[in-house]
Image (cartoon, rainbow, N blue to C red; front, top):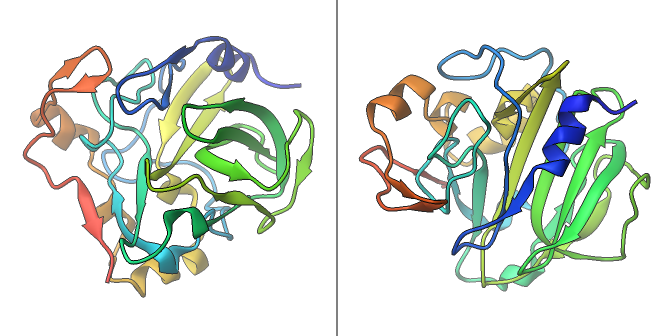
Length: 232
């Protein structure tokens, strides 16, 4: 049975800011480390996107896009944006299911479709992928396999983004995609110049010390910390 925290998260969806993504008002966060979240297993072995077509990635807790929060942290982007190379058609970038699991929610955004996937072996997690041009419609309950192409990125009007939620009983937190990625998959990122996962995550301590300014869900400032990692 789906946890109450995930059900509450779905019910608390609200529409968004000028970036026109969807903000998830989540349940309170469990205890986390300041860099990589101390969660069980790095189980993502298949990437959700064609990494060779990506130029840069925003950091977890960045000032890019808009405020994407859980109830423990706010005025920071607790997901990752993937910006495709300017030399390619952004709508050519393939999007895959990073896990074997079940579709638990889909809905239309201002650009493309957002899909939520619950991994079969790790049902406490929910993986949310934004702005997809689906190959075919999906219904709640549909099964996906890791590496299965589900669509392409919608196009140059917005970047691709991915968020991960983790539920433990009544608690819900947003965590970095890289905190649940296997070492074998992360090697494809080290090959692009990223030495460690910490480079892709702004710690809570660092973000709190360099707070962003928000008006509703819109960032008034992007902070003084580096928000992007440029891939080689």
